[in-house]
Image (cartoon, rainbow, N blue to C red; front, side, top):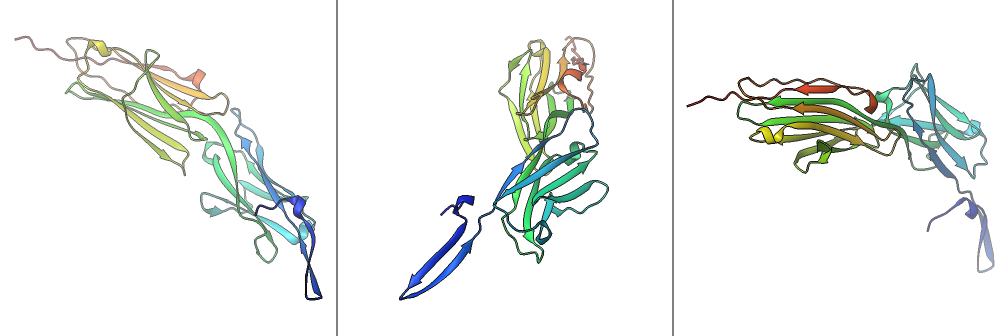
Length: 250
């Protein structure tokens, strides 16, 4: 029901004195992921390694695709058949290249030898944007978008304590991003503090954090700010956001 390379060989079948032989060759493909380095690099490789192959490299070819598009050799990608192993070289890789790739082994006549295998260019989390919108009805909405592969999870904290009031979390698998928001209603002095968007996955350095400080004060107006961050956790600046209310005495 599930074949392995060890099942390769010659099988015979005999019925009423007549026999026939069948040669079975089982090929296994093992994907080898890569991790996008924090520092820039000229190139990296994704691989699909084979075992059980006896066919000469000239008789087979590899097909690679990304985001439902077949890749071709160009200034960004280079596909190599090395000892029957499929190699995808990505030149000057950046975060737009992270995510899932598919490798397919075919014969020269485009007959598929195996089903497409998933290979991933992994990446640690980055906070792409963290915005705040303050409204005169004393409500504040915090929005955070993070990217990575695997797609990060987002957790919200106030002064280091986890908040359980996430409005929504939307994942875009094609762009390897997740968006999340939190709404603070009827903000008063008890809501003062540092609010953090924390994105995390299992790729080192594992997490990224962006912060905003909410500081309600009297006799002033709302001030809000926003902007993309694009930085690792240790490099995120602290955004100081003053949120205050205009009070009218009777």
